Length: 294
Image (cartoon, rainbow, N blue to C red; front, side, top):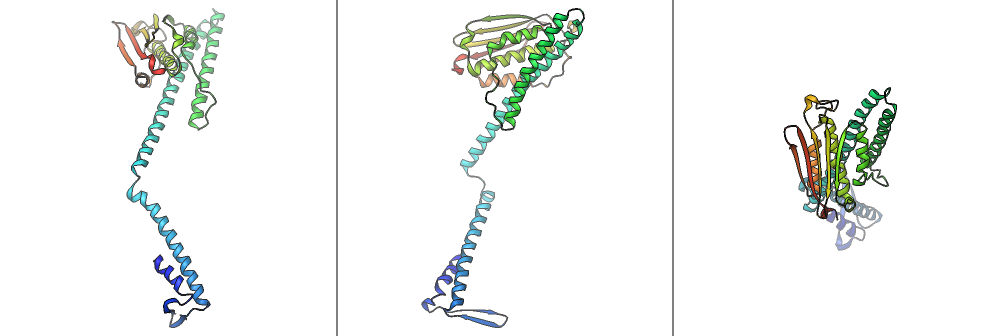
C-alpha cells in the first residue's frame, strides 16, 4: 500500500509516463491532469504512505514481543535481574531477622531484669537500661539502612558489625542475667570483610536462640580462627522444665532462624551443624573457610 501511494505521489504531478487519474464521488468526477490539484493529491499520497509505514512498524514493534515473546538474551537478562532482586530481598530479610529479632529478645529480658532489681539494686537496673538503649540504637541503624535500600535510597555506609564487636555483644547479653563462657582463640584480626560480618551475625543469632530457648546455666561461646578456617559454636542447656524467664515457649519464633543461618553459611561455602548435644544441651556449630573472604 505504501509503495502504491509513493508511486502515485511521484507520477501524478508531472503526468509522467502518460499517467492519468481521476476521482469520482457521488456522480461527480475530477480528472487529475498535472495541475495544482495533482500536486496536492501527490503530497497527500506521500504523507499517507509515511503515516502507513509508521503505523504498521509501530504496531509490529508492539505485537512482536507479545506474539513471539522475548529473545533468549532478553530472557537471560530478566532471569538475572529477578535472581539479583530475590537475593537482595533475602539478604535484607536475614539482616532484619538477625538484628531486630536479637534486639527485641535481649531488650525484653533486660527490661524484666531492670524491673525486678530497680529497688534492690539501682546500679544493675541502670546498667540494664543502658544496655537496652545501646541495643535499640544499633537496631535502629540496621533498620534505617534496610528501609533506605528498600526505598532505593542508598545509605552512605552500611552498618558493619564484625567479630571486633563481639565483646560488646557479650557484655549486653550479660546484662540480661545470662552467664556466658566465651573461648576465643587464634588471630581474629585476620578474619575480615564479609566473613567477619557473617560470623558476627551467626553468633548473634545463636546467642539469641540460646536466650529464647535456653533453660538457664552457662552459654558456651567458642570462636577459633586458623589460617584456613573459622570455627564458631554456641552451646546452651535445653531443660525447659527448670528454666527461668528465658525458657522454651517464652518467646514466639517465626521458624526462619536456622534456615537463615544455613543459607548464610552456604553462601560462604561453609558447614553448619545444629542439634542436641547430650541429654540437656543444644549445639550450633559452624565452620567457614577463611580463604573465601580473601
